[in-house]
Length: 288
Ligand SMILES: [Zn+2]
Picture 1 (cartoon, rainbow, N blue to C red):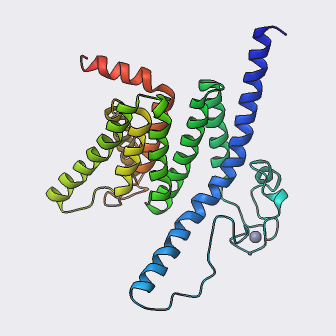
Picture 2: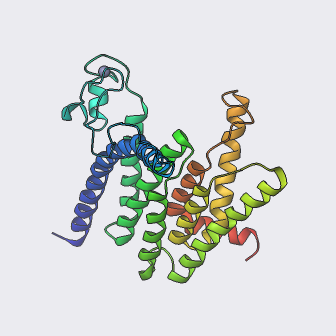
Picture 3: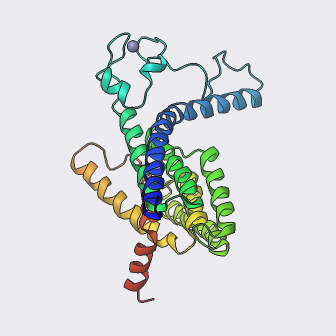
């Protein structure tokens, strides 16, 4: 076998494996998006009760693995063969096998997006440490996006490990130099922290959450300080565009707070795939 066919086989295997893995992980991310906020809520409730010396409510504890998945309408346990990513949704025609209640389209959409982005990462990075990092980053950003849209929260249990992982990967300059990564993490946090305080002191309102600072710090740790202006510009433009669109379509009032995490996550993904080109264009535009 010549080198070309070995390379073709490796890339075929890698893209197929990444896509299948993406489908399976996407299915798991649906569980994370639905359950993690509930797990956090239970923990807060327990802490509050402990502080106030009250007995905590007698609700069964939730974790990512228990209780088993069940239909939210009729409570029937979801069988493993009804849980195959995308295929089960198509086969069941989007309805619960027990009661026929419709299943949210979001489940297959998240599975497909995860698979598609994992496939793209395999093409973009090939068999490298960058691919392993990129997949973990993509999956974390998808989970954060879903949770922020639902609950306006960006859990520390995802953002902080993401920040550490970015720094650790860059010990070997996987995405950027360690120096740029450390400065990027600090710059990411401080930029949005400053925006938050300027907004708060001038308007008296909370413009964004602390989770947003941590997410931008994490992205700074992955891609270096050079990517911070780009991520802020990309996320603000897309955020403003979608915000105005939602107000125009009357789907949302002006006063409804908008989660910023999904736009940061989107900008983070664009930086992952096109960061070098975008930063070069950006620096040349401002004359560097
Ligand atoms: Zn049902």
